[in-house]
Length: 317
Image (cartoon, rainbow, N blue to C red; front, side, top):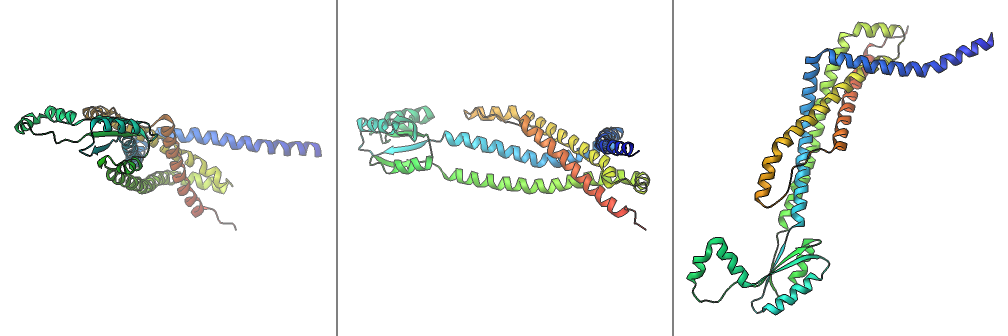
């Protein structure tokens, strides 16, 4: 007799995890059925959530492309070194050779005064140059230095050269661009927090309506002794389905926007001699967005369901 009782106890103990898993599977499938069974209501909720998610994600995508573009531009920035007028061609060539041997210099291009004059003629200033007659060429010798490291440090070193008359480079634009990028990232965080809260409220309100429609069923389950986790589980999965759908739609919207903008942006970049191309989300980032949206829907449903269950929990007598 005791042996049979022990066997029954062990059987009940082992069946508890199986029942927990079975109810998760049932909640997963049943919530999907409720999600698909109301296509218009589900599409409206998913659409509102998707737009709320797409706005900060789109801003982050734009900022990432701007940062990538600025990095390409920074790598191709050149430092112009105008030499003194008394520096002849031999000294200029020797100086260019010494600079090419530096570790922080990628390349050096020597442009003689004659080269500068030819460029001015090519730019359409030939008549103005001819009007000067036989006057001496006033253009200085120019060294165009491509940095291999930090441009500001290289420019400071070039300014100390005795042959240098003027060193020209524009580092202020980078500082301003970095400041705008930092501001944009902070704005994206604030926007993501606000719109994420909005998406949370959208899911919560939708799940609340579903709870109200099933309040009699929930009341019966509570009186039968069902745990809050048992009652909450189908609504959690329902919220996750809303979030999952919203994440997929948000990625689709951003991919369509990137596809529409890629060609005109590539043509604009090509007109400036650049091969820059707009990039979207990679598969890992897209998967993270979808998973985060599903988690957001799960949390929204959990908050609303938990609040309802606390309000309607039967009082012990």
